[in-house]
Image (cartoon, rainbow, N blue to C red; front, side, top):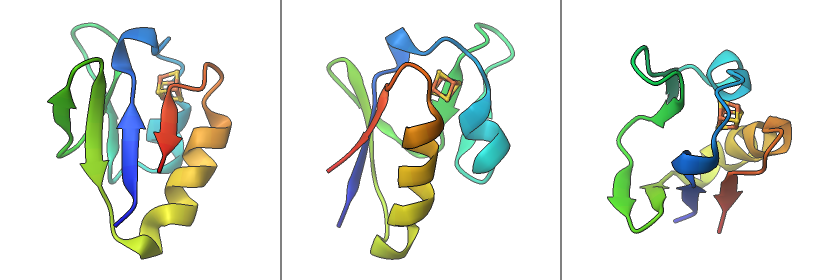
Length: 73
Ligand code: SF4
């Protein structure tokens, strides 16, 4: 299964991810940064396994992130 890696500490809170894929991305009202629903924290990353059918949606989000903190593997 594809995995999404989100390096949250370098997020700048632009909101693009939450605008495009609100079912997975939210903006935290406390610190203004994005959160990835269901992701597990491992080291510097939040990691989420996704169904293969969601890969294109997450790739679109990754491309729209201005600081490239979202990666897929
Ligand atoms: S698109 Fe990137 S920088 Fe913008 S809120 Fe989402 S993760 Fe953060």
